[in-house]
Image (cartoon, rainbow, N blue to C red; front, side, top):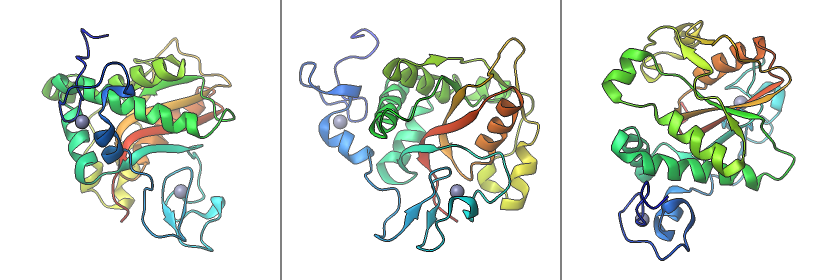
Length: 241
Ligand SMILES: [Zn+2]
Ligand SMILES: [Zn+2]
């Protein structure tokens, strides 16, 4: 492990005290990145399946204004925090192959969030959201694959790094209107032959969530292959529109 991850903080590079700090982050960086609450405001409820901030009275699971009332739904969503400040920097840095130790650290934080929810939350297998091959050539490896590996190791959960395949290039979700986003990702990925998700709870993993349209498309194809439930883990959730 020391060969892969030198005993320094993967975010600020400070040396770490011997074996005392998990995830290869120093205590101040861990605190900085690991935001306690996703949205400010005391009385807001957070939709468990998309992270949307709902005002009191709005918080019925069946009527979330963001994920709506049309399936497929995500069973549950996990974030380290909001896509802002240091966490935003961390997401951008973690895309670079040289920063994979940082991505693995963030994966460890995500796994911890899932453990904190208690033993009743259990996934059977973790899969990354795929990137189309032209994007992989430009950017190098897929951050989501590094996250999946770290989460799988920490939770002792099986992983299937190649289960989903991107069929075509999609436009950047952040640049599209809400109404265009579902159409942009529809049919953009498939489950590769030979994978059986029958009756499993699948965790799909990505670096950032904008509207959740990509993750819901993954949920749609996985449920068609028999998955009983699909949850999502991402480093950061982009701001609410
Ligand atoms: Zn640090
Ligand atoms: Zn929602």
